[in-house]
Length: 441
Image (tube, rainbow, N blue to C red; front, side, top):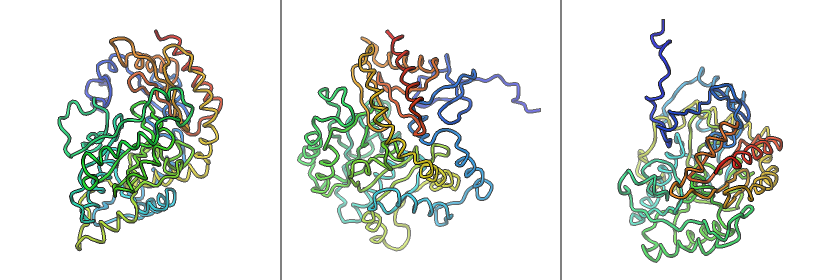
């Protein structure tokens, strides 16, 4: 008999990430299964997924084509190293990704998460400048209110102070651009009108302060997600690209949340018509069925690092599970689902409907701003005096009780549903959220 069969469930052992552990374990919200647009809670209730898990289940839950691909691969090849050996699926997936994204991004380096993808991208940028004879380019530039994962590199270039407070000084020289959230852009529908080029010109301030020859790369999320869905004003990303080109600075797009259809296109780079030098991927890459991330680089970066190195290993970096066979199988199947079901196109078609319904919440209690682009939305609530974040947490808890999963960051409700959502489910999502907002004081 299994010694643990009758052991009572104890929530104490699991130290949960980015969670108020004491509060959660007193009143847990457990999901026990999922299909399509819905989770099933521990008490049997259906919970409409308004966040695609954590911005990642773009094709909906439990798609049999993805599940079947993982099962088949597990039986055929459970693991193979990609250090000095390889397996076919990793090469097939890299080729598929180069076909999906801007043609200048010709190479894929595989990781296991967005955090690892960011740290890898930063190291690749530094390695490029060393190989290019510009060893003095060591400064990495992030942006205030940016989020780039939980690795030391991503935390350093990130702009969320709470994420840094417990961990001491950065391990690498960094600086930060101004954030892009301006009060005059409140309640913008889509890209805000004000401040784009001027905010990007803040990079010129850092160039003057540090010297262009010291700056290796600038990393930005095309849309800042974890800090409350901050959509860049018109012209911002284009100006940033121009300034980087002017000073020989690499531009990194952190597309962990924006790639794979979230904006109705393969990536934000495609949506905006801007080609970064490096792009980070994760989340929707495998529909979250198996952890995976990637760094896409230009041919120039790959060729400089690889061709200018002496014989042997050119980049001393990687992970045991880089290009894991099960992850590659999940990713290839996910890309097939996106194409066969035209999910990117579906997201683009639904975006105006999403926008219109989202902005109908503008006059609801405590709402101070609404932001959106593609199938992304944010409802910012006024904080309670002396208790920032409390109103947001209450909204999340009450929404779950009402059958809706939302994500909150501070007092901002962030929404990013699976791309399979229907017009009827959009209405259900916002009707439920509307009811929730009326119950919060």
